[in-house]
Image (cartoon, rainbow, N blue to C red; front, side):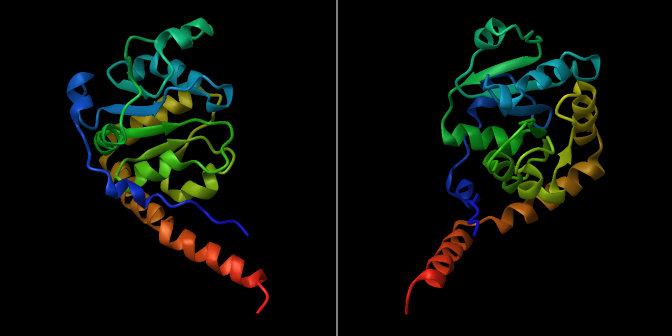
Amino acid sequence: MVVYNGCDHVFEVRPDDGQLMTLNLTRKRYVLALANTQKHKNIAILLKAFAKSELKSVTLVLFGGATKADFENLGHVVPPNVRFSGRITDSELVGLMANAGALAFPSLTEGFGLPPLEAMALGCPVVAAPCGALPEVCGKAALYADPFDPDAWSEKIRTVLDDETVRQSLVSAGRRQAGIFTWKRAARSLFEAVRAVTPA
């Protein structure tokens, strides 16, 4: 039996919008993603997408421990519209998610994929790769882009940012999808699984 994680812990975190001023961000006009150099996280495809003219006016914000130098040392070209937040607090992350135009999650494999659900719970649309557990977790509440095609990522991101009908549909569907994954439900599932194999 699989017991899914919950994502409703994000509602217990008071958002801190300070990073918007620190990074000079415009609400709903930036895209959030992990600053992670591990190959399976596939952030390189986002760097290529944001180097394209279609996304020239959009900022990609990478949060986490990896730096611009870390990516460049691996041979990646970091375009000028990419900003690095560094390690941030949970409150700052919630603030960034709640104000972002989208969360981009291009992983080639994930065992679960918690950040997309956290973003959905906070009303942030998600563009994800159709890989690993992501289609199972995100369902029909995300837009999916080919993890090896920067043009696909550019197109999907522009759609989310510029088409208000699509955006609102994703926000509504995302909140519903995230609502399925609660810690109360996880606890109940675990309890039922244990009870099913426990002798009377």
